[in-house]
Structures are given as structure tokens and as C-alpha cells.
Image (cartoon, rainbow over all chains, first blue to last red; front, side, top):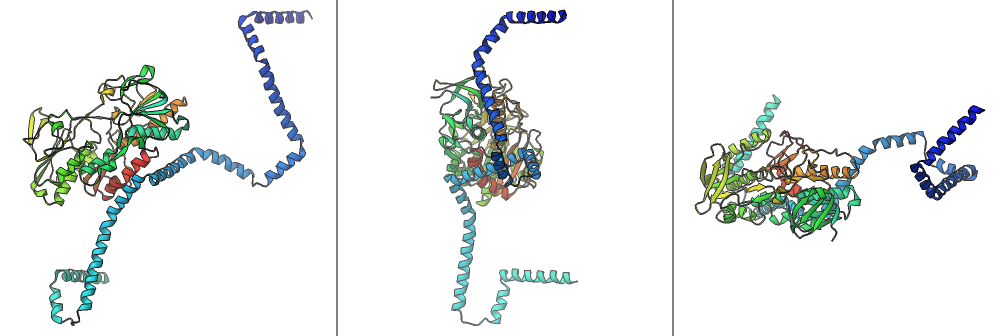
Length: 188
Length: 397
């Protein structure tokens, strides 16, 4: 009993010593100052807890949400997939950023009049010579057709011998000869 | 006018615009809090000038209004920087205003010194003295090449850092090719007077280019530094960097690559190293003395070739590291010294050199890039300009 009362007196003394310290007094003053706010915060927490408690006690509401959740295909597999997805997010974000950059670049190109004109001019530079070649070939063929339709004379054997001397015919014949040789070698 | 910004970017060139666009994409909160300081009205895509000089592109396609390339959300302050006070996070402008920043990105570029070669400035654009390094005079290069009928065609490379180290020889290859096309090649002696010790720094491409030089019968003279032009006598005076003696070469046309240097406002600032370039860590691009300052582009003291392609790899590093600092995270993004030089070796031919700090090839194509290819020429001529205007400057490429 005496030991216990001694301990209480010691504790009180220690408490009083602490309370005499100016920094403790300052802290207490500050704490008192904030007390209304703290009280409000505690009330808010209390309200949240009460709300949670009420929800859990409201069987009707619980059943409703349980029913709603059951309409989704949520199972352990889904939860596992969610975790795997979170794990892959850094890589996916990088890939998405690249796709985003590509989309933004394409949009910028399409909206940039100077660029589209530049690209069109470049394309024209490559396409024009092909068209010109095509036109040239077309003209040549038209000329040939015209000559054929205007020439009613039969082709003589002397004309054919004359053609043989023509370098273009010679070149074609050389190709024919070379092809035949290659084919014969393959047969062997 | 707002005078305090979260980020101030000095320079509205390739590097400055790219970083601004990337920062704005990374953090929308920076909208209206980024300033780009540049006095110029126009923005140029200079890599096209090689082709303009060779008659393969129009110079109008290399020029846009500065206003049109400023990213949405950035404020363009049309003024020149007079001085920096990094201790107070401020820069002084030539219009008397002072800008405050939390983070500073210095992308001031490289300056051409037309006066460093005696007689050049006065002769430029006349008497067959041409240079691709000026928007104003680049047309004269083409005029000179296409009207050339014979004699000595001289091309030079100075004893100074240059923007795109391969450019001085690109125009020579185009001209040489054109001389063949017009049937005058046999009357032309093509001479390359370069202050460099070899045709290219990276061995793989050097070997390929040496073969090109040999095939084209080009008289390449190394360690020759052009110091004077006498246009009336059509005489170029070189200093032999080996013997220190002067040598004269008579020419009938000359394409000059001028001296280039760090801009004065950087050179004389506390941000510069002993050579006048912005003193940055070669990997993080953060200033070595001021943690909230970054530098990139031609104006930074990075031991790699000064090219737009290098900036394409530097800009994401700067943007990421600035954002990291803002989020109080360590700067971890690193630049490996990547640079690229599409060396045009003729109309429809190109060697795509790509390399890093180690001067080893760092190629992005699945084939040998030391081979001259038409596909790579098409890429330079038709695709790169589009990628530049709508990709790089928008922060997506």
C-alpha cells in the first residue's frame, strides 16, 4: 500500500515537472487551440464508421449489391488477371506511349498543310517519270497500230532477212538462244 | 508580361522546341509555365540545305514562321539573352527584362563566324564563292554548280566544330554527280581541302567513304585549313596543320564551310566551359555546377558530332531529367552520345552513319549502313523533313 502510494506520488511529481516545461505548455496550448477541429474530424470518422455499420446491417442493400456483383463474371481468375495486369502496367504504359506518339505524329502530319504538300510533291517526283514512260509506250504502240492498219502489203522473205540485221532483233534472238542453251543444259 | 516561369528554354531551334514539346506532353501542369526565348522570326530545317545547294530540294521547304513551331502551352519571348545569373535563377534579356526560372534549359546552338576566313564574307554569293550554311546564299551554291563548265571545284572543311560534320563533303558528292550528269566531269578537278585528319571519324564509314573518294577520283587533302580567299584571283589560301606552312589552291568554284563557334552570350557566361560551350554532364545533360540547369544541342560541350539526330536522342533525356527533378527524384535518364550523319554520296545514294560516344556504329537499320543506298536517300529527302516538322518538333519522335 505504501509502495503503491509512493509510486503515485512519484508519477504525479513527474507529470507536474513535465507540465512545468514551457515547450509542453506551448504544445498543450496549441492542442487546445486545435481541439474543435480534432473534435470535428473525430465526428466525421465516427459518421463513416456508423455508415459502414448500417450498410452491413442493411440486409436488403447487401443482397442488392451481392446480386449486382454476381451479374459480373468476377472470379478468382479475374482477380489473378487483374494482379498480372498491374504487374505488366509499366511495360504496357511504354507501349501505349509509343502508340500515342505514332497517333499524334500521324495526326500532326495530316493537319500540317505544308507537310502534306511536301509529301505530295515528293510522290509526284517519283510517279511522274513512270507515267511519262507509260505515255511514251502508249504512243509507240499507237504508232505501231496505225502503221499496221495502213499497210496492206504482205511481208516478204527479204524483209525478214533485213530485220535479222537489226540490233534490236539480234538482241532478242540472242536472249532466245541463251534461254534455249540454259534449258538444254538443265535437261542434261 | 509574365516574367517568372517554371521552365525557361533558351533557344527556339531544334533542341529548344523539342524539349518544350516533350515537357508539355509529360506534364500538362507546365502549360503556360514554359518560356522559349529566341529573337528569330523564322525556324529553319537546315539539313535540307545540302539538297537545296545540290538542286534537289526547294529552300522554301526548310523555312517556317517561328510562331508556327512554338508548342501550344509554351510562351515565346522574342528577345535575345544578354546574360545569365544562375545563382539567382535569372536571365537578362536584351530588351531590358529579367526572366526568373526554376529550371533552365540552354539550347543556344552554334554560331557561324563568317569573318574567320579572310575575304569570305565579302565574296560570298559572288564570283563562284558559295556556301550552304546560309539560307540567303544557299541558292547561289546551286547556281554555281549548275553553271559550272570545267576547272577546279574546291570544297572545304574548317578547323572548328561544325554542325553536321559530314555536310561539307555531301555537297561535294552532289556536285560531282551533277558534273557527270551534264557531261563536264572530265573537265573538272574536284578537290576536298579539310582540316580534319581523315574523311570521317568512325572507322567503318571512313573505309566506305575512302572508297567513294577513290572511285570518284576526288583529290582529298587533309589537315588543310582554309584561312583566306582571294576571289578576284580565284585563289584559296590554306594552312597546312601538319607543317604550319601556307598553301595556295587555284579554284574555279569554291564551296566554303565557315568557322563555327559557341555563341558569345554563352561563351562569356558562367555556364560555359573553357571552350565556351555549356558545361554539362555528358550522360545526364545536367549542368556540372548548377543542378537546375540543363544543356543540349550544338551549344553543349558533348564529345559527339553536332547533329539534329543527336538532339533527337538528347531532348527526351533532358525532358525526363527535368521532370524527375521537379518530382524530387534522382536524374536517371542517360544519353549515350548517339549521333547520325546521312552522308549523301550522289543523287539517289546515301551512307547512313550512326554512332555513339565510343565512335562505334550504333545502327538502327537491319542492313549494313556503310553501303550507299537509294532507300536511305529517299528517307533523307522525303521522310526526314516530315519526321522533323511533325514528329521531333511536336515531341513524339
